[in-house]
Image (cartoon, rainbow, N blue to C red; front, side, top):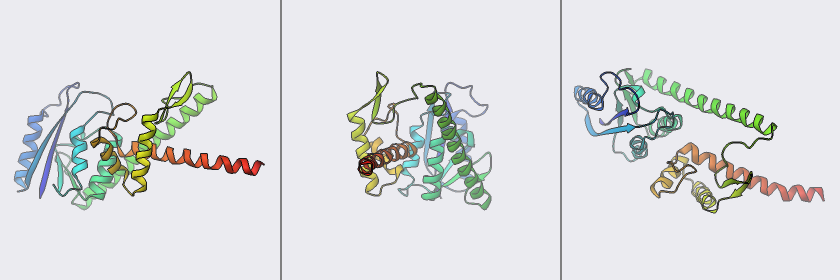
Length: 241
């Protein structure tokens, strides 16, 4: 079996005991060797934030490469070395593991998705991840509703717009990106493929970071909803006449 080893260390956090990058790599290499697998690549990731949105480009690249037949499994020393980014975890499970059939093996927990117990654990993680994403979304909507009821300006402007004098104003470059996303989606590309397409072409996101499948999905669905509302307005006017 061809495997990729992945190690991660947050430079702003106290280093976990016996979990330097070198020690993580040693654990992976011993485990891979004991199973007579082929270690095709070892990826090191250094992060420098305590937020749940930490930037992990090497892990993102592994997910992107999961449909190219380069490897069969991703091996990590333990689960907390993977990611705290809920969107990235959701993409890893849904795209890399479930859709592309890449196995996930976490050594310390004994998680191996080739087994029935490992597959069940993966499904449970997927369910919890989706639930947490929805919980955050619902909580955000509640906060927004309360702010709007008080007449307060709510959060960041949607992609394609910015606030100017408390009014939404179109951002032409972002609207071009919205059109590009819509075109790619109408060609049948998945949100993950579109995110990869945008990242490869260095198309900037709203805050300048990398694109994720969930971000693309939100932009696309908002664009479709806006288009439907625009289509409904003339019909409503006609009915009123």
